[in-house]
Length: 348
Image (cartoon, rainbow, N blue to C red; front, side, top):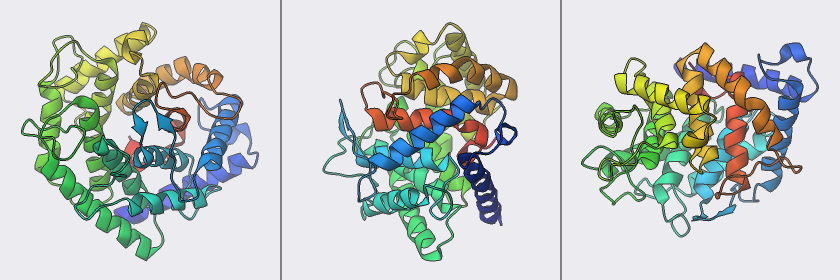
């Protein structure tokens, strides 16, 4: 029943999105979505659709290498954030091909990554699982839904047995170490699977949340890792808030202090929170503000919306720090489309 409700909800949102794309009135737009924002979103979605490879992947080269599963997962999420599923919406074909590509990269051991290309394979695994979990709840093809289910079940098992002794994750399944950015991708992916009705070991999520808590500094920020403590990292702190809220820990004192840390840095102009990783920081800061309260969200979106729109290039893309235009476009689109409430993982 839960999956049916999710499916009906997302399909209904998708219908309204198609009306907007066809030139719907401003009254149909969510609050704070301006005509300029809507135009930027449409151009960004068109850019992603135009740059998708024939096999369904996105493969922009980054300073860290090529990460087709991670990029495809993020681009697929951005398209779904626009109200598209594998069968509904103007970019349904793109979402469907993205799902098939991610499924094709799932290994027998459960890892979802392009092993010959993604040296830091747990990023692909986390973003790939998150994308598939969002698609699973809206999938109307029983056979494809079963395929997604099987891959996610194996993926959950891989994530659970790859968790470090301290409760986090590092770049590869056998690393037995941890750091913040990989850990948050696994927590959010696991929570998305659980929300979609797939069994996830409760102890895995609890140990991961405890890991983030142990990385907290006195100033409220979160350090890079438990074994490599140091100053608080703004992007990881924002991500920690988002995933702790995803896990339902709204009253967690660490989440509260991390939220206050994030707000202080955003109020100061963002330089400390960005730390050279604007896309990553904004992706999770946006989620943190959105999930924390309506007041925080309205403040954040009104402060940063127009700047994000102005940063768009003429071809519809956004620069992605040192990770490429697909990354920059996908993460920015997810932020700008949060008011549409399409992605189940980002429901309040």
